[in-house]
Length: 299
Image: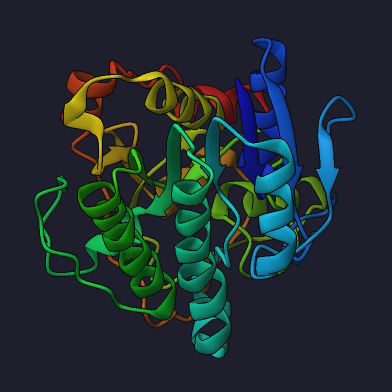
C-alpha cells in the first residue's frame, strides 16, 4: 500500500512510518516540525518527505494528486492541552479545519482508508472510569473540543460520502522518542529526563490523578490493524486505544525514584483516565502488549 502519514517525523508518527516501511509499504511523510516539546524529529530516509503544514491546502492537494495514497494516517495536530488554551484559534485550524480538508481530499482521490488519531481527553470529568466509546464527550479545553469536532466529521464522511474512516482515541502514550522538552511534555518522558539530570520530579497537584498509559508500539499496531480491517463495524467508528490499566502520577514518580516536588494544578485536565478497550479488541483484533511498570524498570 502507499501510505500518507501526517505528523510523520514526530513521536508516534515516526514509529508508524518505520513499521509501515518494514512491512513493505511505501510511505509519503508529512511534518512541519512545529512540536516544540520534541528534542528532535525523526525522518525515515526511505520515505518520500514533505516538510509542510497540513493547513496548507494547496500543498496537501499536490501530495494527494501526485502520490494517490491508499491509506492516510492522520497524526499531525496541536497535541498538547495547555498550548491550545493559549491559542484556541490555532488549534481550530490545525486540529479541525486541516482534518476536514484531508477528508475532502480522501473523497476526491479515492483513498481506501483514513485513520484519525484522536484523544481520550474527550471524556473529560463527567464520564466515570473505565470510559467507553458510547459515552458523551465532555470537552474541557480547545484541544479535546477540536479533536471531537474532527471525529464527528470522520463519521459524517463515511456516512454521507463513503470514505472509510476509523478514529483511534489514544490514552497517554509513552515510549522511545517521546517528547522531553518543556513543562508540557508528557509526564513519562518528563520524569525520565528530570531523573537523568538529577532534578526533582515535578508532580502536578496532589499527584493522585490517574492515567492510563499506552506504549507507542501498541498504538502503531492499532493504526495498522485499523487500516487493514475490513469489518464494516469499524467504518466511521471510534475506538479506545488504552492499556486498560491506570496508575496515579505519584505512584509513577515513586517507582522512578528520587526527589518529588508538587506543583500547582493545571486547568482543563481530567482527574482520572482508564480505557475500556473491549471494542478495539473485538472489532479490530487489537490487544495491548506492553506494561508501563516494566518499561520504567528497564529504563
